[in-house]
Image (cartoon, rainbow, N blue to C red; front, side, top):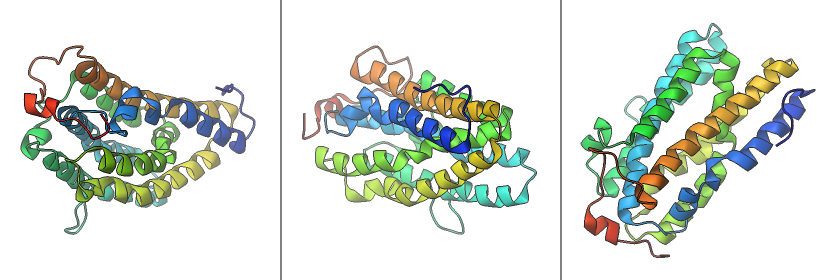
Length: 256
């Protein structure tokens, strides 16, 4: 990775951000390589969806934390759409409901998923750290931590056909969350990148923007580390957390 301590311009910062995504984004994690190529059992896919719900549920909360600190009405109006995208608006379902549809399609009880009782402790620590980061760091860093969305369309374009081809228990309607994000993520990422390039007007601020993206990549990667350890490497599922049914562990993807 290039040196981020003395970036001379906004364009140099953008190049560094894209390099970070190329090297650190969680599409590279071994768990995602298994997930997207049909090599997990139904139980392992269930564990991923259940734990990822915890992250999805925190997105509007971290965005609300950002809005609470924002004195710029234009920024508040622009950022508000992110909360509506996930929570829904005027009777239209949002991303959290779509994620619960995915979980239900996988055979999980939505009430159990929403209770968060089955999520891994490491998942909770990671997502809560993200909310704290957005609430406590500078507004520039809070905005910059969302820049993983620059790379989200690529992972969704890989995930949708990969999971549909790889798992007989996955249907087209279960992919609704990801299809919606194909349009939403580029819009959000473009806004956040423009904001960062405008407001990171010193090498020190550009470094902070890059470090915020590095932090967010670590948040996403650490969640997959926990899943991989507990459900793929048989590292041990913590007491009281989600344990797949034996029949779901036996049901493998088509590519297995």
